[in-house]
Length: 449
Image 1: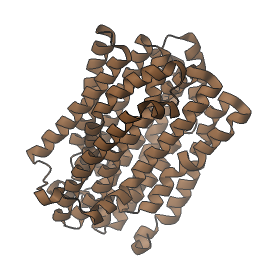
Image 2 (image 1 turned 180 degrees about the horizontal axis):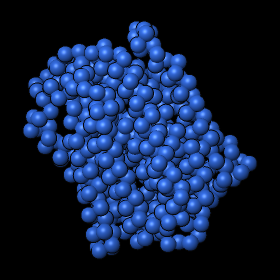
Image 3 (image 1 turned 180 degrees about the vertical axis):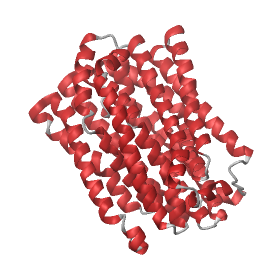
């Protein structure tokens, strides 16, 4: 596995570009797919279809976060193992990741199928939204286990120095979905079910590509049968680090539960559709920050394992600066062209008029999200689960959910939109303070971390 050796020798900015650009391209493509999917549903199914997708998104993310958590937890161990010259531990970790991903992915898919209606109702599928949401989610559940595998694989490819392969794993489902959406939704007139089948097939293609690349042996893993047997000490370490990602998605799902019910209470089905458009645009604005965050993790993990502590601090600093600057540029462009962007999703005049001001309010502090994403990922890469978990939960858990429960009592629907920039600002302050206080220790006294 010599490809990862350059993490400890090449210039940091070169490594960040090499790792972050493919990651950002992959995320950008996925974001564009999400936007295209919403456009087709909005124009051929209507606002009820957008609302149905918005209800399902957090549930799907929560289940797929199992793969993400296992992937990030294991890739942190793999990066540090490679940095410390322990390829056997890296092999064992990967084998355990594969076993865990499929067992848990299948278990949660079946569980959701058995209790589909009450789960969807809890997440805000009420009134006219309920039936199309059931139609959409029932089909989507078929692809969840392979989605979990694809998400897990994405982290592994970056950990062993193959960011371009990780990028393709993310691009493949987007391309497949963009091709199938117009066929299934518009040509065959399958409506919301067509959107679900397009997404499910896209998951299958993504997982197939990842499996093909692993089977080629290019990543350097040499697995024996015993590597697939669960080692409870190792799986405990995977989950202690990966739990940060799972907890983040869990809190995001809880956020959607609170948010969708509040939106329905204060604005009805249209308000949920408004946030569906806002959420898609948030994914686009956060592409640079997420790409750089993912790109920085294997660099930080490898150098920490190799005890190159100054390179760890330099990676952290450069990642935050780059992510904040790039996010700000995209954010400014979206604010300037908000009406034109929103009109792409729907020709419903009322929906456009409600979405434009809501989007501008919720986006006010979005560039600051880089501090939260990178600070949490930084401690994940070091294998420090507790600070990573606390920083991960700061925005949604400590600030946004309480604000969403409190502010609408006084400002109704506007209180929901105002909660977002307040939470972003408070989270940035907390994360910045924590990093300034603790990141110096890694150079001066690594054992104190």
